[in-house]
Length: 185
Image (cartoon, rainbow, N blue to C red; front, side, top):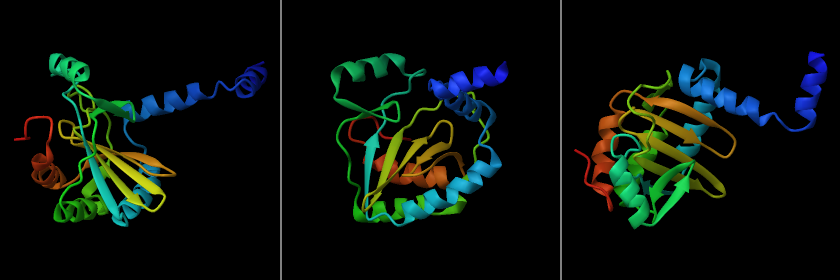
């Protein structure tokens, strides 16, 4: 009987339920070690080869700054990336800052295996850093509160914790890039 149920699910395309359960398990339980190791090398290598880099600035936090977020969504032009809102209008950093960001995101030591949600109000991307190399696009959503990054490439993705001094280095570079929000402290 269970085989018939499995065949029904497969035949009628209900497998996205399995995908969302896997994603939810990853968010709650942390990145499985094998998955992290399999994907982080390809993602950082792709980011290290980037020829161009642009930034999208994140909106106020969905929990801690709810009123400000609602006001910004109403008053400012925004775009959605990876189900999160960002201010419209890509920011192109100075050449030195772009080089530094490419080096940071291209370094395996910048990331550690994601250990699960941090109970800090939920992942909130302060920045989206987008890397392009020809037709290949890589994105990193960075949350300063959780000290996490969600990395996406053309063929894979991975959730990661920021390692070592990565957070401080990102604050130093990205804090000066704000166009819409108050500068990071």
